Length: 386
Image 1 (tube, helix red, strand yellow):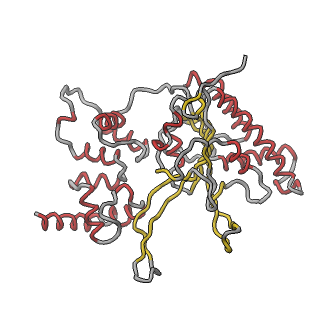
Image 2 (cartoon, rainbow, N blue to C red; image 1 turned 120 degrees about the vertical axis):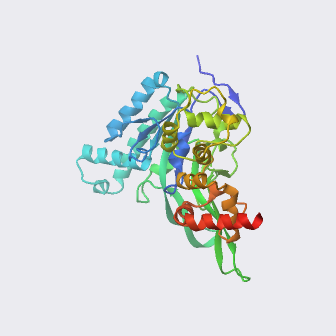
Image 3 (spheres, rainbow, N blue to C red; image 1 turned 45 degrees about the vertical axis):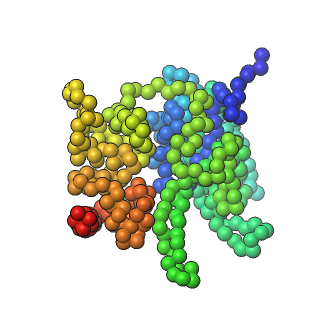
């Protein structure tokens, strides 16, 4: 009897989704994948060691990686696994090449000659992707995180070379793994920092950056690879909420523990119509906040009491402000709009640009490191208004 999967809004229900996420270092690939339903990581490079998330032991061989995939398939109902994230697949590729060279008794992939090594690797990775279909058919999402690299490219319409962003897999034109992953995926997201610049002179020859934000691109262009089968806009904010609707009803419901204090704050804010998310701050930092300020036995609703500096700091972190800056702001009673006013008055960024969107190097180098001066400017501005 053939299997039947009902469809809704063009998305087939009952099966998982095959996702490739790639982008520049530090853009937030891992944080995005961590928000997927029932996420469990197979961390091939050890990049999640400081993050509070579920992970299997770091695979030390291609065989171990495949064994962990088998383990997920066998225990996903018991463990509540809904999404498997390989972080990153370019590091997993190293394990595949190592296993291949050991099996064939050669020192390196090029020792095969005439591109044969890349053919063998494509067969090995192809078998891995075939196995992922078993997970997909049970409703588990499969996510492959990758680093990005630029290569010189050209198109007939432009008589010049330009940088093209693509998956960092292999270093030869004969490498066949990147095309395999793009063909396999339902969704390939290119995550990047988007910087807006304006001209600072009448002739338009001098420019300066006025804002920067993290985005993800869903459609292939001459400048990057991307793909989606869900009719998504070409550009989206780099946040799980931008694509959450795709996964609703597509994966098994994860078995989760009771929400932490930090998550309870988020839930309370959202129920009151206040935008809030845990994505903006690393989970381990939020959990530290939970340990320092445990729930009390008071019967009075804490939302009815004036916020303490500690509670303000927690809320700022939840709102996406860097923890070091949030601590200084809460301790000195400084509000985000006061910082925006000072920053805008000095022409660094527009006054209506949220503090959460400031580049990290600006936050650390110009706000945190020079807090005394910044605070003094805020007090001076406040006195003038008063």
